[in-house]
Length: 325
Image 1 (tube, rainbow, N blue to C red):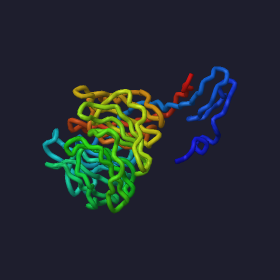
Image 2 (cartoon, helix red, strand yellow):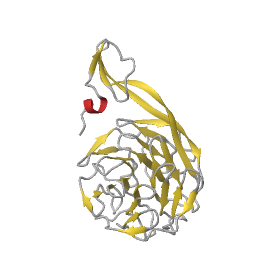
Image 3 (cartoon, rainbow, N blue to C red):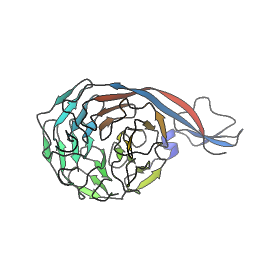
Image 4 (cartoon, helix red, strand yellow):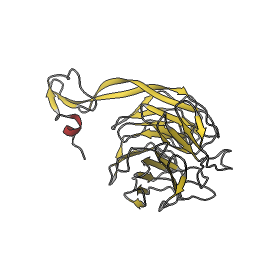
């Protein structure tokens, strides 16, 4: 694990006041006030309308970036008919791929890019452990998850993915790592839950947040490749939310708070969540989500929506936070 000095470039320093131009994440001691302080830069932004999906759906999954995304699976009529339809997004419009998932399903998780994706878990008429890899033109069945489940979250790449949480039943904390060939069970989440969201660029650095067990939770946990650590909660507890980004720079949006739909969007800086602008369609949950906390994409959502929205955070708000007094 990297040290504070390796990340920031200097040790914690003593200042008579506050430094003139602190960098994001810097901690210092203000000897005038007797306080430790922290520089936080919060990305702010807004949602804009993107191109509609060709096949309206909810409970699907996604991979890739805002301008090079893949959407796959889900249900087209409120849970009655599963779909394996795959669509790619170029930043403007969606194109249906000739290749569908081999196993049509909903409530699965996704990882990777738009040309090297992974789809795992989900629900057909039962909960499944199916795992499929996409190479830009076809889906190929690979080794299944050890624990079949739906409503799980994922992170990582096509060859280095993480699958965590979900519903077996009951709610589970099971966490599995994918190395391109097989899934291996590793340290469980601290809080078992379904309908959670995930973020992370690899299978050794991920973030899990939200979900239900059985009521909605706001729990946030960070994965270091060995174990999960509880961190600061979401401001708004919810399940079936969208999530994307990395372990230290994530975005969480939409979802449902028990029986109430929420449009809240929150951005994560590695330490805490900050409320930013809400999603434009509040009744949006079980949606596909990809991207970063500065450029994200959400597509579909219950009940079988076609609309797509793009999140852009072109500027930031800088603030100094007092850690102790």
